[in-house]
Length: 204
Image (cartoon, rainbow, N blue to C red; front, side):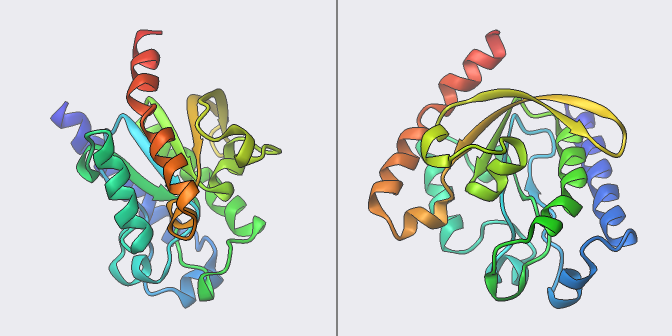
């Protein structure tokens, strides 16, 4: 297990270097302080995917370290998890200027690298946080209608013509819950289902 973890980290580090070498989203890269590739257990059972780094993330080079990150830590704790147990990343790996939403072109440019991250880690469950990351896997869905409902799907890894099987759980973004107490309750309820969903995946 330790060797798999080590090999996965080596593969993730190489993938991060590929993004730099291939000048992905060059305009974003020039304006950002640094890339925020992802952090956590490279052999995690659960991968959490947000949309793009914010100001704090750009400064520290780590995902979800601002106010939304504190809430994410609280949510993880509610199901007896901590950051070291899971892997956390975003679709877009550089902060968009002024915290604007990532553009469709930016998301499309990074999607093959996100797929490769998932292919390396091979999680049992992918948890999308917010609309942007949900749409990368479940297009034409409304988060208000599908949050908390696991979906089994296939994701094409476009650069290698490979398909990976995923179970995707769409959730609201923690940032949205900072301004809406009702959403905070919904997020806690949706998070509380994660252990049960994992058990079902493992026994299927």
